Image (tube, rainbow, N blue to C red; front, side, top):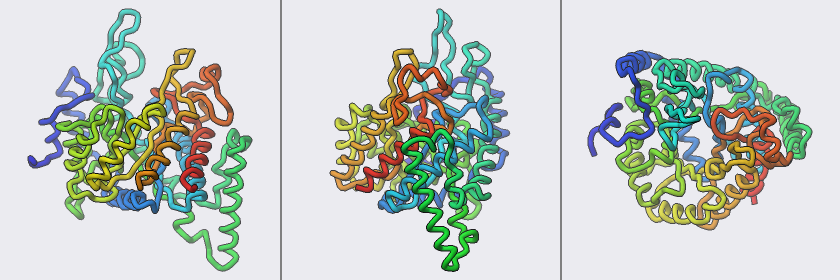
Length: 446
């Protein structure tokens, strides 16, 4: 295998990278980014990989969630706080049911670039570039907005840094204190059946803390009860940006992508001789690989061998996204192939992407029952093959949106226009994310 460098991906097949009109402006922007501080640190990435290795053994569970695509326009502290809070809620539910620690991984602080099925979009006879995410171009259908703009990469870095700063404050500054488990709840959740179940869990946690204080343990001084580790992730799609933020750890001399703790390869860029695979083989971050119906399991083995030649636990997570109607046809074969080659992987269910449909109103949506049915069946299939589900990957928000139908509030197609705010694909709201967590945790605990 040829020697890896942080730009060796340029010698491989590249897809879903935009063409910029002014290459000099792009190069100048990337040169500036190359001098900026890292967004995440090598030690944090090592810790995440170690925790994911525990999940491979069934001793932990991963919750990965956040926006389909982050936007510059909707960037504010309340949105970040509410997404963080829902992930804390989901983690409390899963830990209470499954009795294992939960790894908290946000699709946040970097999820700005999106692959598109078509390079262009035509409206009323006008053809422009497709919207590739806010780090590349704008969503408004004008020539100016749709032209890729290198300055947006600087904006994406700045917003990621600000988001990470706030997340670290929430995680380490007292917001994640288990004494506040009741205050994590939100009004529109409290009134629901699942909200009441969550409140019961929160009350039990408070009782346990009171007991510990009563026997002489000062819970205010126990770090693990007052802080959490929170990690970030995004699809490593825009390789020039990722290359500019690739750094060598001064302690170990290992190479890391410092734009996020966890990078994943999408379904459209996962193939042998892919520039994205080449880039990921050289960094020491844990890597996710999206697995959809188009996947050839034997080709995946070749990709895993390239990225993880030593079969290191925690390095590779397989995020499967088949859809309710396809999971029976594809997941068993994938599991058999992985087991035959004795690959160490973490199995993560992404029930979102394979279950996207168009509503009668023309809006994209996802039905809650399809998400639950796919994940439940995945748990059962993995168990039948001697494996286990190690995590779930959700597009969700802490906001009370109406983008996915179903759930205990029985949102219908007619409700979608009420609060349909997504910048890209439909997301679960906090209530639906919590309900899904209860159902999955109970199925896993059987």
